[in-house]
Length: 242
Ligand SMILES: [Fe+2]
Image 1: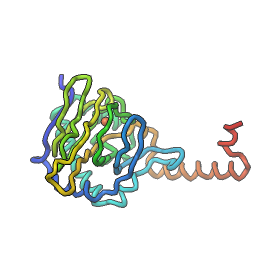
Image 2: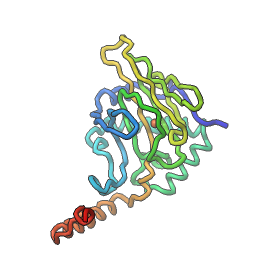
Image 3: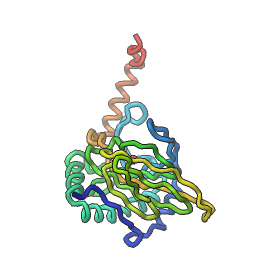
Image 4: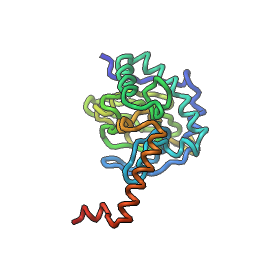
């Protein structure tokens, strides 16, 4: 049984373009439970967030960093081809599930199972399982790394690790298998060392999205309702406190 894939992509795709993305993208520090703070930027589709952005939309950087987005999305055909060729069963399952449940407006490319891309820079990650993706879907992680040692991807329950050197793509069940990334150290060969993991995935919550135009309509209705309730003195958060 094939359970995953680990492959060098440097002969299939020019990594220099992707290195440019890593150098220029504006990362944001995020804090998640059970993980160290991470520096990352997000491109592509995001689901509704009731508190801050109550509509399905595209991450701001998809617009503000158009060239970076184009380069990140241009790797999709390579990724898709590799995934389909080497893990056809998993690929078909991911693709069919996502196609069935997510509106095409929110997919990065037709007939491919990805909606969103993260560029994570320079972080070790404690042992964890991925969450938020469609259940059973594989995690697709491309690593770019120069001037650093360490950063191996460890699967503690199996007692092995992937070195995750420069230009290596791993496809594995990140939600099923516990994994973590070892600390990284400067090896002294580069002025600006870096390790980036570029992750392609689809968030399960996107299954609730309407077509984009309807999302905007819905947002107007929801915002109006909330404004009217506030105006009438009904504050939902105060009601909860009573
Ligand atoms: Fe992970």
